[in-house]
Image 1 (cartoon, rainbow, N blue to C red):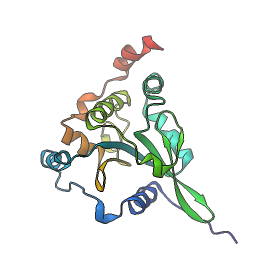
Image 2: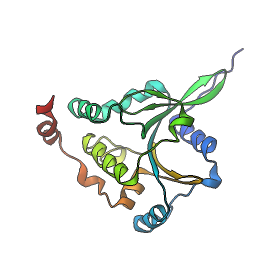
Image 3: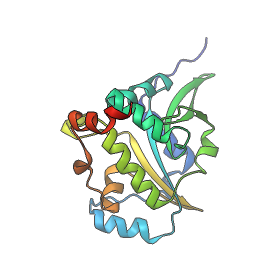
Amino acid sequence: MARTILWWEKTVEYLFVFRYWGLDSLVMPLDGNHEKAGDTIFSSDLGKWLLIEFKRDEASCKSEIDKFDPRAYLKGCRLHKGEDDHHLLVFGEEQNGHLELRAQTYFSQRSKVLDAALQGGIGKSEFGSYLQAIVRLKKKGAGASGSPVDFSAAAVVAQSGDDVVCMSVEECAGALGIELAHLFTTEKERSRDYGHEL
């Protein structure tokens, strides 16, 4: 009898951390002080930055589209398709009774070998600009608990050699001095900004 397994989005997130970095190599700002966290994060030479969003399985990846109005999603695809190796969706897949991790790029939806994808990334300044751009494209109010956008199942990973920093999107934005709440536009503003280009 074949073994059946059951897993959730958090299972994928925890498996990712244990498999790729283990608890010993993670540096996580815990005190909530973004300025202090920023000093820790950016005083080291972390050259590669990735945004990783965790999903239960491949079918769940399609739910990301719902975080955008259609025109904004198409705009994101045009701007970033083929140039989104630094933004990954990581999800679980059952193989022979075991949970395996798979990855695809966010907008391009290209399958990636996870080990190789984690060697990529973009510079800090470019990453900050990308983070601001993607937040502007997402629907206001798309997040849980009244937050503008739900990044609860996402992590920012910055690395250089053996140094790895893993933080939430909110911690990263705070450390970069990005006010996420000010980046959101209304549907009317997005229509004005993106409607004429479609």
